[in-house]
Image 1: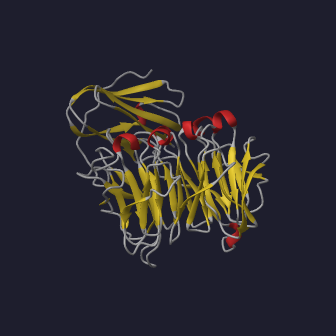
Image 2: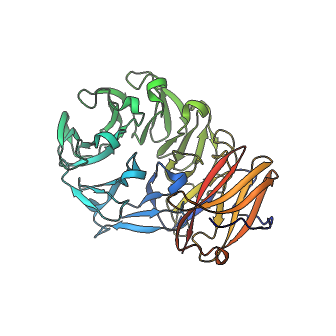
Image 3: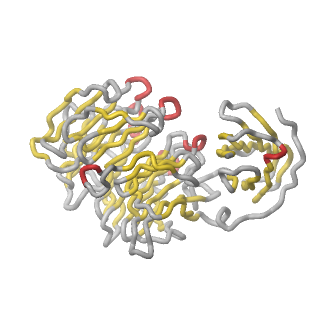
Length: 442
């Protein structure tokens, strides 16, 4: 292990990093992020995927700093080649599996984070595919058809190699049904589907029987299950301008209007992974902005400050602390192109931000020789800042002494350490909190 050396701490705080309150930071320009997927282990691997206008699949493994195109449609002008949806395995850190559903009814699956793809022979007209919440054990995928022909529900117990018809739901078809499932491992039999744009049907027995749960006057844009669904039986549904809440599992008519955004033309939702504790819900409201509720939808606050677009179209939240929110906006005009944004704060998810820890970060990242490490202590006390490799081996101790509450900064010069090019992890620990951030040396 490299010996501890003395490093002077200097207080230099770039405006883009620290703020008194939460803020949006632009991480990608000239894109139209119609769908966003965040790794279940985002705190460690910093992995985010976006679908750019249905034509490209992009990945960042640095929390949005650098992007690589993993897939591009051969003919971007051909609507049939558009990417409808991207999904990440709940066991992503072990299996590296992701799925991609196309508008022509085909699905591709990747066993290596999107570096290569296998075309699955999916049921004809597939318009939605999801991973089982227990994918690490049962290797199951679920699919809904309807883009071509009838609306049917299927399962694959072989990770997409073979498919079995579970139920023939409706004869009518010709549109793109959405499919949602609960990732509460105690509620793996619960699914919801969109039918004829304005209706939602639900099942509690893994698709054998379906019941009309909701029928509205406008398009259903999104649907989310509570992460603790088996205990609180809570689901949310978003139409073009209204968010509805149901605390009876969605299986009856007890839907409550829990958020009205007049003039909006679409709403996408993201629910806090700790919803049972913080009651936090987020809404990307087209024509209005990004809104947060910290009381289960009873009231909403605009958190669009710094987000320089009024046309949000997608939103997603990480599943592990530090909690991080990503949102996509589409072009307003030629002078205001579509963008991807990340929401940063040093406070809690239910207060003025998304993080109750240190906002540990280095810039630039990736770097070759020198980088600046920035963090904020939520209180005074002993602290240790270390560098680890991807196997978890500690390579260096940068700080090991008492630190005062507030913002801190130091410079790391790799010429003194001679670490090889690759991925490393910064870890900050104290008697208050601990956090980890990825650091990449080129």
